[in-house]
Image 1 (cartoon, helix red, strand yellow):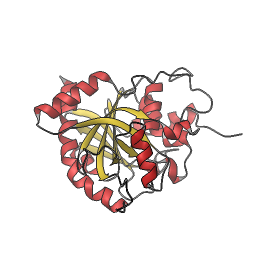
Image 2 (cartoon, rainbow, N blue to C red; image 1 turned 90 degrees about the vertical axis):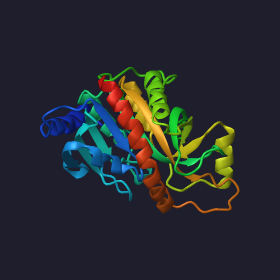
Image 3 (cartoon, one colour; image 1 turned 30 degrees about the horizontal axis):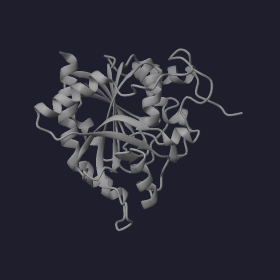
Image 4 (cartoon, rainbow, N blue to C red; image 1 turned 180 degrees about the vertical axis):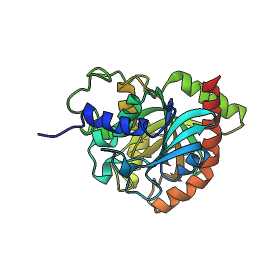
Length: 280
């Protein structure tokens, strides 16, 4: 029989983090491939490598440093994950989303997720930022739902509603911030696949046909766990490459990391505006 994470394991990690900080964070951020530079903005930071936290899974991917940075980000007490964990690294889905459970036990009520994604929408170009308004959970449809296993009733009910996975008020706030700062902000549907191989041209044409605007290998499991526990979610995709619909180009991880250099300043400005608005 499969084994699943327990409340004891979650609380061990949460208590370890609590003992390291003077003020508990109220907002959590997860930084995707090439986007870890945002963590450098944290003031009075307490830095905790993932390997030191009980039961916390370690990231193995280039561009994911693998540490928590906890402190003041634009005036808000934040816990920043500088790098995330993916299913394709060999972890089970409940282990991939373990950090979200820990955030919830720390009392975090709002989570901002970021990722690097391939642009399916023909109007998107590398360096663009997309506000995620909905998702297609293909990885979950194939059986890898992070809620599989015993329901942790301390967080939520067995069958959580996902009709508003991304918080409407936070979406409106992000739009206003981008408009006020004159930052072009696309919107669209994010599709989550298991990875780690990039998609074939036929895959990409299919994903576009079913309504996808961007595709990646993360974020959706984290969103599901967040919503199961009643945590508000705001999420962004940094468009790192244009979909190779005809097979004429080659997609590389280096390309993804390079695009992050263009994306980070835009995301930083938007997230700063969102956090500043949350304190008002």
